[in-house]
Amino acid sequence: MKSSIAELRRGVLRTAVCLGAILGSLLASHPACAYEAGGPGDGEFVISDEERAKITEAVPDSAPATPKKPRKLLIFDLNVVYGGHPSRFYANWAFQEMGRKTGAFEVVISRDPAVFEKASLAQFDAVFLNNTVGNQFSDPVLRQNLREFVYAGGGLMGVHGASVAFWNWGEGGGDDWPEFGRMLGGRGAAHREADEHAYMKIDSPGHPLLTPFPEGGFDLRDEFFRVGDPYSRNRVRVLFSIDTQKTDLSAKPPEREDQDYAMAWVRRYGRGRVFYTTIGHNPAQYWDPAMLQFHLGAAQFVLGDLEAPTIPSARVTPAIRAQEELGWRLGITAYTFHRYTLFETIEKTCQLGVAYLGGLDFQKVSRDIDKNFNADLSDEELDAIRMKLDDAGVRMLSCFYSVIPGDEEGCRRVFEFARKMGIEVLLSEPPLEALDLIERFCDEYKVSLALHNHDQKASPNYWSPEAVMAVCGGRGPHIGVCADMGYWMRSGIDPVAAVSTIGHRLFVVQMHDLHELSTDGHDVPWGTGAGKVREFLEEVHRQGVTPMKFGLEYSYDWEDSMPEVEQSARFFDQVTLDLAK
Image (cartoon, rainbow, N blue to C red; front, top):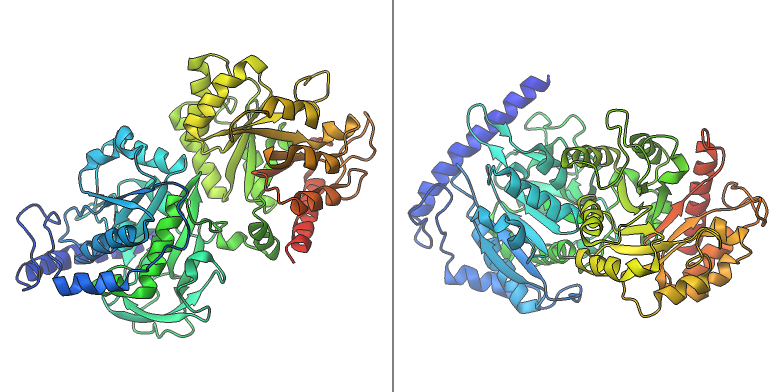
């Protein structure tokens, strides 16, 4: 069955190549446009003045979000062994006009793979693969640069043909870079008519990218791709899809057994913000005001200016929606399962229905990778960890790093590790004399440091809210606090009162509830002990503090704590549902 489907897909792709070549020859004789001499797909399509005016008139007057800083968007529109989509030139013009008119971003357009050199990529906030068909480039270094750019926090936007970028066309062809498909969220280009009429169902009501469209859905004409693996609602947040109840699809057999035809989605790949839509085959999409507003919002999302929920659709519950509304993220702290491997911890996190994880630098990775999760891992071993996280639909937000070296070379190795793993914040207890160096790397890598506490004897500089805030005084925005509530309570510190002392420097909370407030207090499920966990969460909400992560750290009954951990997670769910009302 799989082989016949693969043959069918290859047949569709070969047909598309032929149609592309025919389209290219037809365009050359069109009175308003022409392909200039050059390789397939390298020609320039000339948009008429009338069409430019239609696009400019339809471009929104303002952007949905105010840019946090000047933004730069790279548009890459190379087509390889394919006549090319003329709509990409309309998209180029539309995005240039959107950036110019709204001031939301500056556009740079290129077809030169050299633009993906690391130093070149560093100037951009996001990459827009504009109908990029075929194998864009095969240089493994350039591919690694793009992957690391996205995983470390860059944006990736793709329309239509981007789902078959890095794909070898013709006999014996196929997917030449499987991780690109993971990154984008789907693969393939199976479609019907170029102007197929379908009704769209809104899958994520209230999502900020969907404001241009009515919540009841809308109808549309375009060439709609039905993508294949690795597409899954366990990986992506579907924005809208073909409404199979309202659309007559009986003319051909279903392209997918589940008939799940997602037309647009968003996701996170590490820290990276990813958007893809199959819409974009026909030029008319780029003088449609609603579609342009949709693309503008998507651009601001991948650039980092428009916040939007990305937890995969299959993982979304009422509690997850409440947490997205609050801006709160619950993550399992790997120390909870430190007697297991990181891979087993990822599996347990997925099983618990929790979307986030905090790593641990002294935890073994897996049975096959008998090494600790730290900067000594090879790129290939880090690749395997990223694949494991992606398969589970889990994102690693933080990592406890026992010792961040106080020398230049050692410190950079740790931050390179954090960058490659998409980590937002490192938790550690560095000596005071190392903080200046560490903060410099925090600023360079845009990775924060949360100062962790044990008790007064083990953490004399960080043990209390007052002590750690004295250290944070005068520091920049990337230095904050990781509050271990268990140690606070055992030291006689009231976590509720501590919120006022720490305020917005509260980057991470290692949450605990104890059976009694004493040095002998041990963990119990949240809300069942003496720790005033609900009151603490209510105070964090009242003061408008938004930590990067609420860590679920359960430090008791190490071998069999899943029932208690799950009870704690559901307690957090209930509190957030109450707070979001």
